[in-house]
Image (tube, rainbow, N blue to C red):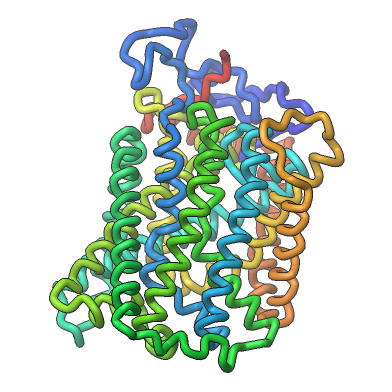
Length: 520
């Protein structure tokens, strides 16, 4: 873990390299590296990936279309094709289920508006981490980063990789034959490694691929919606005759249903992780959000309407892959299309997730909350290669953890708390920094409503699922000693500094990477 003086960012710690000479490129142990960054005195040279600017820094390669593709790529993922049953299972009524899908979309749009203000007022990559650090300081930001890097991100990567693998391998096994777990894990591992390599070495290819996959996902959902509409036009509307009959009224179960709905919308804040790579972020960040969220909400509500028209609530609850069950019932010989589209969606969602979350790891290291070697950038590809490799390794470890889904359950409420904390920063900055430059200003009631609703969704599960909440808090609390040892403890022994220096030096040579050039 690195040291970082938040009060005196220009402080300098001299390190010893294996040769006992001046530190090599990018070995500064504080948050503001004063060593060369790999660009020397020549700030312009030929052969840059984007222009004649050869400075080692993240390049602005993302436009409006790529921004929309990133948001849709993460949100759509594979969840809407696999498990919308979480809502209907809790509320037991078709009408109530659709109401929750609408309200979850509206809540996501309200939150996204707040992130548009935060992302343009604080135009830094890192998303929630950057906003919590700016508003509430080092420890809360570190704990969010701890949960995200150790639990949220690698477990999600592992689950998305396993989802892709299961849909690719299923056609090779008979209906009653279970896919070997080792085969799923191996294919998921290969997929994660391949996409990490693609995001490390071919950023342009990755973004173009996301654009294509985005339209593929939309086409798949439009297909489901059209089939559902045709089904209803043929007179099959019996599932909607008494939409609110026997609906659940227990606040705890309704809150859990909202969690399922909101989880399916998760990802609307991921473009904020890559603000520094977005061209004209003051325009393209809010525009991408304004385009994506209404589109997602409309598609999700219509897709769930189609599911509920074709399948009964009992059939939805019993299905492990609702889109496949849907296709088998109404598409006949063409039902094979659905598994292919789900596999493509899972593949694209995993690629976007790997790309965006690696930037949060990179920014955390740049601020001294992660090892210094993770704040380096490839001098050839201008991507955060060490961070990508680090997250890849953690994701591979999660593939062999038997209780990976349980870890996400434990951490989901904690993650919601940090999202609430990020949005509350809008209110905090309005009070403490009234003159702060804000290219976009949302009405004050928007963050207030979001924070109140999130607080309700956080408090209710404390009584409904106290064990899960306790485990989530415990996982977060485990990060506190690491914070004090890695970040606060300054007088580290010389042998430890030498070890960190040697490791950083070796990784620099291995990845051909250097610290970011911050000069303009």
